[in-house]
Image (tube, rainbow over all chains, first blue to last red; front, side, top):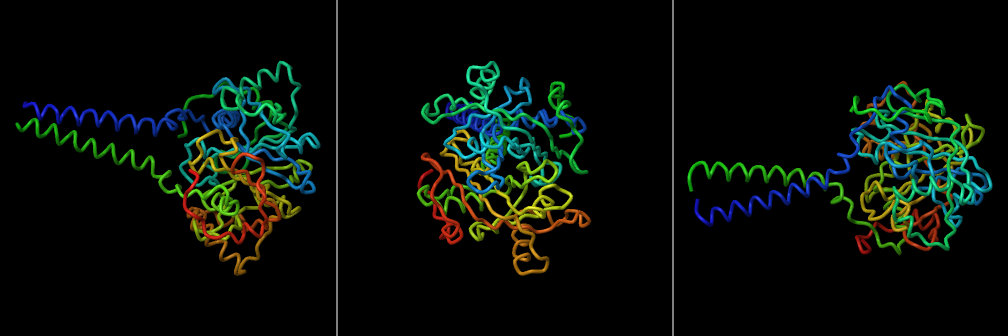
Length: 210
Length: 210
């Protein structure tokens, strides 16, 4: 093989390495989320949705709009993936209506979708694209309490930039104390699942219905 | 160049074409959504969020849970991109709590995030990642009315599989009649924007703040 042929091959080789790296970084999100639980395991399915999502819509009763339901896009965390507790924690500022609403009336719900995880193959409202609504009470945690420390660690690990959010914005830690679970993860309407089953779900099993 | 070298080069060439195609299809989503409006144009920003998103969380007052705010993941459409009206239409079944709740009490809100569009560079709760909550009344449209026809076309074009959803599931067309707009698309809290400004926004301008 002549020198210019070797050079050509070397160039093609490095270009191929470059493209492979690009393609890998592009699909990395999908690679980390393949472990969707068996759809018959409702508790694991619900816990998987909570552990894999980093944001959802938190609804409260609006002070500003005479008790209308006010949904707000918020980040949350229940802990690190596969180490979460199932309890969603939030870092909310009282400059935002949601925290103020909750301090007046604790009733709230958190709605999340499978769509952002990247495993849905159909429309976000198709029952095979899972969705979950956790209804309950949005409670302010005592600063300095053990649970607040756990929550802060869960939040700051999944949302590192929260550590740098302005100190003078009165960010406080809240949790959703769940009283009811609405899960759709297949045809046939909402699945029967109790809060107890959800909170005590075994660790998430690996793939079967993808 | 010998025959085996030519074959090797040909193989490398086709593998490179394959990888390029993969990488392109992977980034296609981002390519279709680059036209984020100038952040100072609040009406255009809000309309862009509505036109580019295909799902959000629709919150109503729960009949089943004593008036608690119930958020539910739903698909919606305000029309085709750049041809939308800004009014979100929904295709809801009364087998689902949201439609039933709205028929009892019309108060509702739709919350959406910039995150699914793919243009956010930071945490979904960072103010530079836009979010929008439209509050108002969730109204059932008269079947056969002109607006129901417009809505159906808007929904079925963005969500083609809706056309095949079961006929016996009592799917009905609803719209959100907007009374208030909560938009965060930069630092400094909610932006001042009226419903009138939102509904009469000029067509979305091309990129400036990305």
